[in-house]
View 1 (cartoon, rainbow, N blue to C red):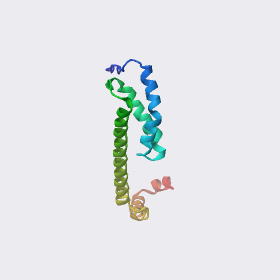
View 2 (tube, rainbow, N blue to C red):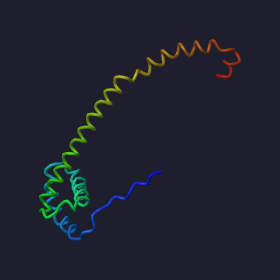
View 3 (tube, rainbow, N blue to C red):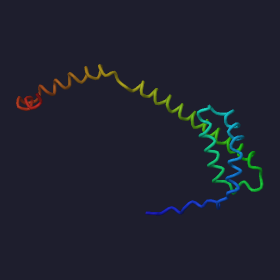
View 4 (cartoon, helix red, strand yellow):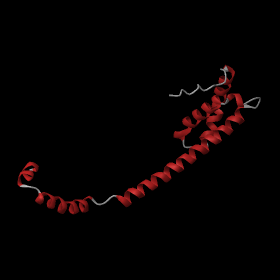
Length: 130
């Protein structure tokens, strides 16, 4: 069994956390214009998570424009995921409709085979099944 090495994260930066919290209202407004209201908190939290994990890449750049870029990527990724799920759901519905035989037809076809098999059993075996 191989043990994966731990993920290395940048050292804690309380200043970054404060700046991220300060940028949250503007980030929420940005996201609110791009996704349904029910998804705003999820998207903002995803952006915060990406920003926190990649905070060492920020360098000397301004935080808010960088967060807007991260948010745009998160929104695009979510949109692509939704489209893939929709297409998969459509394919599955089509498969189910195309391949599910009518239960009444199946029973009628099976009745003859079952009755024939029962008739071929010995009297004792038929009695066991009753």
